[in-house]
Image (tube, rainbow, N blue to C red; front, side, top):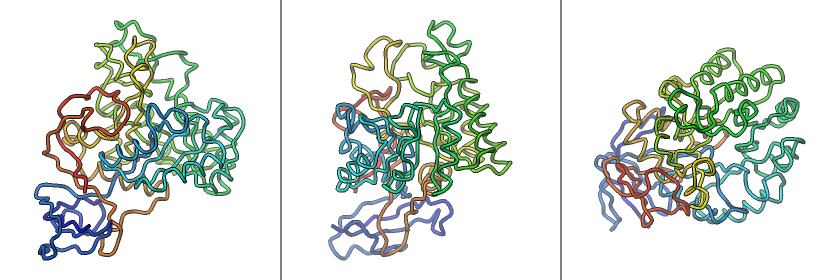
Length: 413
């Protein structure tokens, strides 16, 4: 099938065509021609892209997919369709499945299941056997079997020696060790940010130091042991400051921020809406502003959706008993378009959601040239739509924007 995209605004930071308005002819997933004007002489399906943006398809460097084990929340097929709706071509899935992704057989299963989905799903493999944080997994074998990096997901590596050994061992093959920085021992069972705002809620709270102690520990360990460290979904101004200092010292470290922590603060918790119960927890406005600044100056390398689908039985309960997380893949660009683009330019957004993740995790950048695969997203920033049962592909709907109007939508080709 041939598709002619007319007058698309190219957003590709660092590319020679960035900022251009061009016609692009695509046939069977390949770019046939790029020019200032292409005549429709072959009965091509034509899309008028006047006012629409064309940019490299997004990479989600952290999401949760239920399969295997929790298919009722999200399976690989529904996640792939949701990703296409949201403008993503690559999903990097956490290993919090059942069974966990701690052996090569599990990676082979995923490779076979995802081969025909039209989305590149790249698994993190567990750092520890069984995700229990005690013994190292067979990391080299997992790397050789296709693991993009190593993580125990939302389970922090509390054991200092285990984290040190992981950083040391992965140096032999260039593996990346990803840790979620959260020390639950500071206040076990905490569910919201510790602040004046949340005192009146009467819910057990977690101070910023619960994250920052773990960030500090991992940076210190990496400085001592070497290795390639990635800190997943930081949420505080203090964490951003420590990572800035580490990068200034030349440490090989990167970090990400969850989109929810850029959109919302702990003030949203007043209504006890469990859709705002996330991990990391929502912080204060000064933290949110520090995270935005970190994205602009490069301290924070990437924005992730942290897509965490949950069934209604785990969300439509009292706040104390509700599970963490919100769905995000399908609505990420719309929410950025509505609420963040005044603070973050589209160049910064595409840099942090399409370019930096590829560079960090050794994924080839899309080639915007004739003869190359069309791995790009067409986005209409003015299209108003409603995220609901009819428009979504995800199996879950644990999001505060369900059944609400959003502005900005991906154009599926």
